[in-house]
Image (tube, rainbow, N blue to C red; front, side, top):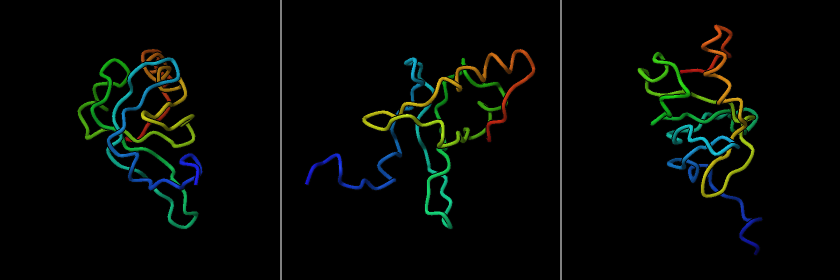
Amino acid sequence: MDPETVPQEITTLVGREVYSKNGVFVGEVEDIRLDLDRQAVTGLALHQLNNELFSDQARSSRGVIIPYRWVQAVGDVVIVNDVVERLRKADSDGDSEEVAA
């Protein structure tokens, strides 16, 4: 069986580093948010956050949860949309998108 077609356990995501598609470190996967009714992953709980991307409030909490729809690829690392990078810019403008902490 081809290794790429073998289903992977979602727990293999835990501990993987998360980067934006531009190569900026975002954080590390600590846990996974699931929707049990739909049997789908809905979010990734990150810790060890990049201090330059997240506000002081997010850094002082346990971490953040990013929507799984932001994930573009999963391999040795997790690649997410560059929307994560825009959070900091929007936060400085006062128009930040909500990211759960």
